[in-house]
Length: 97
Ligand SMILES: [Zn+2]
Image 1 (spheres, protein in one colour):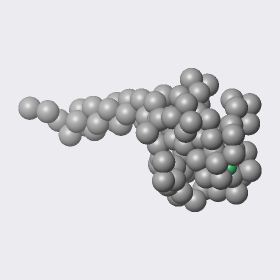
Image 2: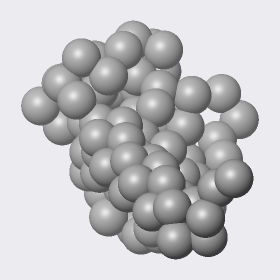
Image 3: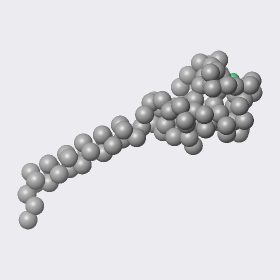
């Protein structure tokens, strides 16, 4: 029979593991390749104001902000120009594209 103390230890290990796992998979910033992928998906235009984008003036943005548990994954990303990204802050903005 499993003793309560043993069970606690097991849960603690699993909890620690899931936290570490989450930390590893949930990076704050999009990688360079994710950013380029978002840029391609956006047709090299800002998904908010439509100005032409290059890899140098693109901000890979979280549609659902990271601070609101938005994932750092391409499906949650959008390519914005620096100005739109700065204006957006941590609001949830879903573009039409
Ligand atoms: Zn813009």
